Length: 116
Image (cartoon, rainbow, N blue to C red; front, side):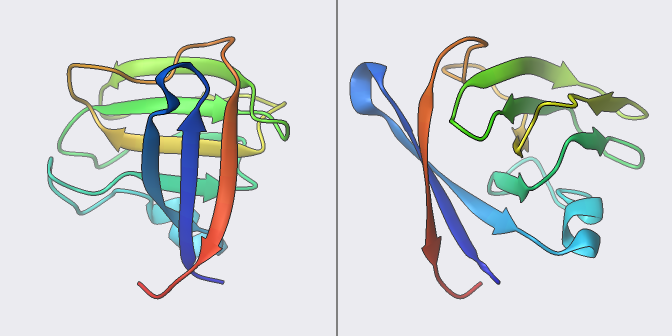
């Protein structure tokens, strides 16, 4: 199932849109082969990620099934393997300065249908 995920942060009510990746091969690829201007992705039912082959650093956030931000890593370079056994969704975006999720905060995750 393709579509998008909306992540609404409680403080400030900011909304971020992530392209939803459900299938195993989609999740395995993630942002691989994209550029620094790539849209962020939500890897559904995903507890671990890799950055092998990446040409730029990533910001990563692991979310629990109830939207708690379990772990955040910023500026993750190529050749890394990260995991969180409690995660339900893993969010990835090209590394950039500015606001990103913080460990311990709770967000609302809404899945919506859509075409790629």
